[in-house]
Image 1 (cartoon, rainbow, N blue to C red):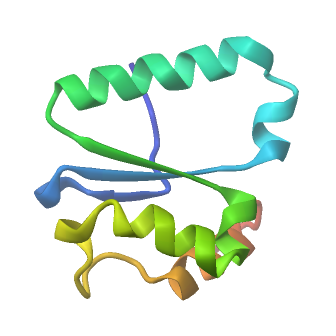
Image 2: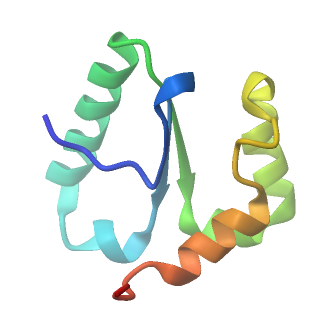
Length: 96
């Protein structure tokens, strides 16, 4: 199984995925099923997996709800909402 998290913290066994509609819309149920399977395997291996919808990045209330579920990870080493939005803005761009 190969998966690439948007944010990975191996020392904390924490993986964060930003799920965007554009990426998932043409992949159908097969992609949804694959994501669920990967998440189950990762959790069984001891990883905490956080999935955040891309549209939720702009919603302060939703981000507070999502992040409040993971208080043990809320330290300066975990990205802030602003860092999530910055990362979202960079998706699809080529870096030299």
